[in-house]
Length: 81
Image (tube, rainbow, N blue to C red):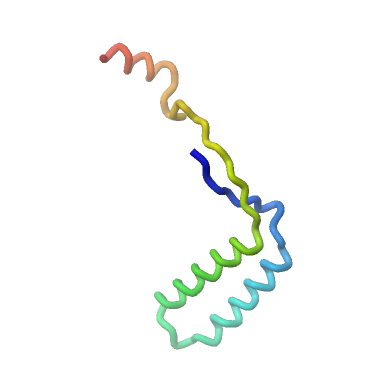
């Protein structure tokens, strides 16, 4: 299975900082807004900033065995069949 992960060490820190400062300034002007609308605005804005300023990398997840199943558990499973 392939999935995208953020590579935080390659992020554009200055662009992210400027975007978060602008978000902070915008949210301070909305003092009469509801908590739900402020949360939605914050969440959408942060996700947009992350997608803009933090590059992603596609990784493959090749784990055939689940990490919670070790040899002992697997042998017990086979005996129970």
